[in-house]
Image (cartoon, rainbow, N blue to C red; front, side, top):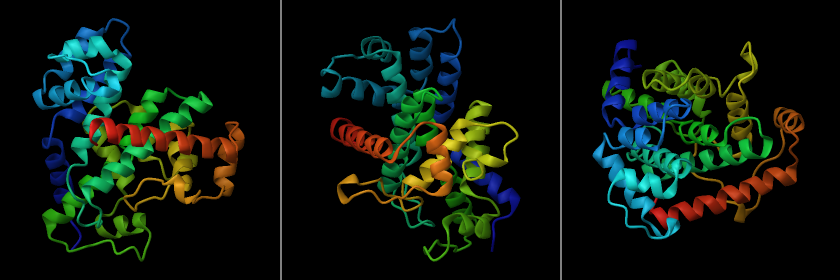
Length: 286
């Protein structure tokens, strides 16, 4: 039996209670837009959650950042810089969000994490290459592009609907049949409740149909393009060592033409993303 609207919103509330980390990330991103904010204000915000602060301090002290000896979040942010601290905050939040299996999707938490991380890295590289958006914001959107799966999985668990994706139909159609909305729409609801910017919420929510927006949103367009480049919904990152698995679709070709991309440059971005993916896994144990 499909979850009711009340059951679905109850599932959203459960997701919101798992950790304050996503709200902290949203507030940190808003602080970065404030010219009056500084490292101390970001450190104080992150330090409000001890588990999140400890994770970032641990990563900041890793060999990747020169094996530091920071003992406080303020010291860690001061040493590695605000930009790198925000990158670590993104990674920590995404890891917290994906630390459980998505049983209804048949996706293990570690694979969900890998797919989310690779999407974040590719979106960051794409933004840097095209110059159309802030790479750090694109990174966040890529990391959180499948956050709606958490809410859908939770709603189906709560309702004991017994609905499982078997791979015989598109994952988006299965989501609509199961709960009446796609994970993109569910993700937009979550991010809106967590007070992410309207641009980010819209980018996630409209990732499957950016052309229907009255005004362009590069984040939504880039996610739509990314879905044609990376395997979608399978819980696996792109593996360039087995060769490119994509071909430029008409929509993909149009995006590439508008933003000055070629097959060679996209493949270079994939290789760059894979190298960053490996470095993060090896240095931070993700």
